[in-house]
Length: 90
Image: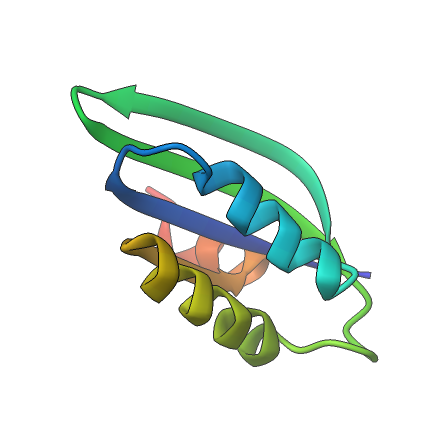
């Protein structure tokens, strides 16, 4: 199983978590951890995902999130967990 990190930011409105989770479920991607917060009217969320990389690629997940991003007026970025970790080390 492969792990990925997804970040979601944008103006808060109803249905953000549902839209992201539904798109991931359609791809058979499991959400293993999630953290979200509101900063005034801005929504921020980070999720740790797990998926079978023999059936799904990061680019396929990002393509699905691009559609959600447009529909929900959000910025959504998906990257492999090892890349996310390496980029965020002190």
